[in-house]
Image 1 (cartoon, each protein chain N blue to C red):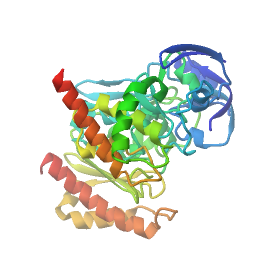
Image 2: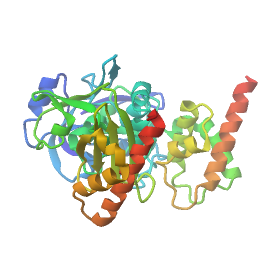
Image 3: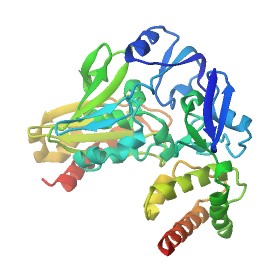
Length: 156
Length: 259
């Protein structure tokens, strides 16, 4: 079937199998940040944005993205590096496999929520699993990043 | 993983309905549960182009399209104002933000899943499903109907004056619930739903006179449902939790709405 969509702002037209998962398609197009960590829509590793909203690319059928915009970590390099520095400063991660999906959801949260509390942060990010850590480093990094962004906004 | 030979964007409810009459075709909601199956479908029917992704509110009711995501319901100011946050409470524990952006209320309600927080929540309210052929059916009746090939277009919730609250019990945050409980108290009656027993949510309706002795009501109502065991909890444990959740959920209505 023919599909037309935008990946990180680039228009793509392709012929795909009708049941091709969005995740596999994105990886075929070179977006290797998108990972499959489970088979049950439960881990958040495959998080991408569809028209700006974080969704699970393992679950949304690819055809449903026809005519729409997908954003992956590859399209948010500057912001990802900015938040990644906070993660590194807190020693937040070990293997890093869950990192791209986590960053996609943190950046979505930073856009969607204004001054989130610790409870808001935990709730928003509860669908991102990390098997190496206890999430404390990530939580410190997210809080510092949110404070940093708030400071940057008030400087403008 | 969803496996299908063809993928069709229906251009009208009638087309979706007609395609759905074939046993090997299937309507896709959010694909959250469907993707867990191994079945090879012939045609996957996508109804996302039918304009069913809006919540319309007026002074009497909410009309929620079948393709509205759980996240959009969770964030809807009108629904949360009407239920004093019970709707958000029923949804916010489901997996994660991305999952709730992905899955739909139509898929949840049509599925009538045992684990469904969504069914447990909506079944105590004055809720109706709108079916393409079957017309408008009260949700508590739809919950008991056999699965057929009709097309669920949306859910209507009437703004009947009710004090509504929701509780669930999970062994672990974001997991399927061990038990769900919703309570709606009207002028003269109380409706309590218990779901994830692990079978799907069912209701009991009584006169509000029972609220003179909440402990007794909670005990008797909890005992009136059937419970079974699975990997998450035993039936006996669930019955015990049900009694506690009913009591606490009634107390929540008092805290949120006043006596």
